[in-house]
Length: 186
Image 1 (tube, rainbow, N blue to C red):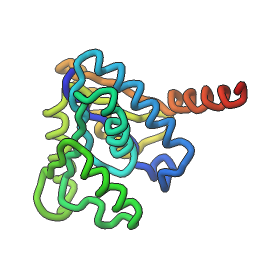
Image 2: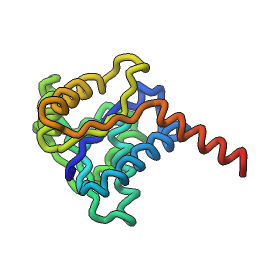
Image 3: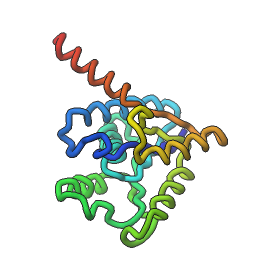
Image 4: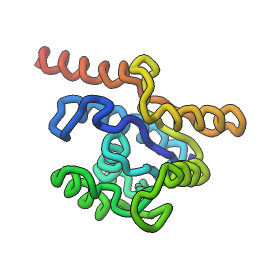
């Protein structure tokens, strides 16, 4: 597997409103563990839609892994220009700094947001350009934005053998519990 789409919840869907939230490091740790395992299978590119949440945390993880894994690259494929335009200033700055550090930044459509068709076109492109997906999604959390990507990826998995990997809230919670246990023991 050379190209992996990484996506999942938007930060607000996890009740995370800034990067200081204590859960963010554990989400990143779960993503990192999965990416390292997939590099043994030839992973070269991580592709994301660039939404604020799992997508951008995955970008941070790849950027952080560059010293150990210089062959790993990351791309943001935005559905339209300036997706961060309506975000709070600190989130805009965060996004713009990340965009400077990714290996590739592309737009699926030129111009501002015009409609959901742009998001669908972006998702189509990401699915075509990737060999599999790493999705942070948990059925027990109820329905949220990753539901549609999950359904598409699962269909592609069943029909074409598309790689399908899921990180659940339980997996992230286990990492947090381990860290707490280690702190209590240390």
